[in-house]
Amino acid sequence: MTQSFTVSQSTTFTLTHAKHIASKVATDLKRLQRFYGEPSDQRIEDFETELIEFLKYGYLGTVTYGFQRNGEWIEPTLCYTAEELSHSASIDDDPGKIRIGANVENARFRSFLTYSTIWYTLNQNQQTEFRKQLPFERVGAEEPKINGYLVDDKMYSSGGRALNRKSVRSY
Image 1: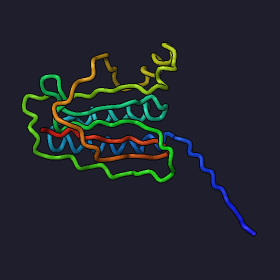
Image 2: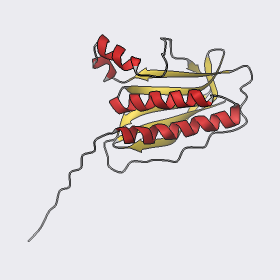
Image 3: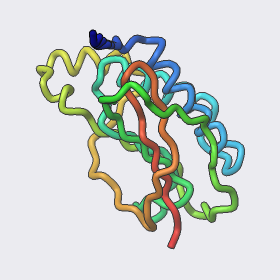
Image 4: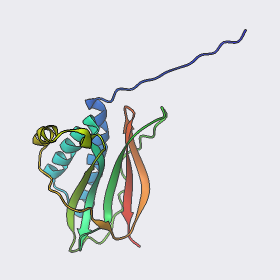
């Protein structure tokens, strides 16, 4: 006699999952602050709050935090891409590996966010209501180019969703 078992698993993404992932990004931002003087504690708190909301509802496409010179991202800049995990064995790295010693002279700290396809299924009123609960307002802009190249280096995941992190490296 042969027996067979099938296991089915379903994960519901919760506020706790969103906070877990966002806290790792906040830790990365604290390391940028420690090594490069930006962003401020208040901005880190605001970015974390914003990220929690975007993750909770699945509205995040990508978000980039880092330094720009002449309108281009330079090292050290961190780019995060949201994704749904289709497998149960996900990677949940510890935050870190922020390189020190990059030249940020005459550079400004910036952030840029794009929306997921779910965002575009909302009507204008739903988008407006969502934006009202965020700690700051983002304005439209073209996505900046990168002066260098991107390196995949981290993945933060929980509850079936993940943020893949890429870091800008100089040529």
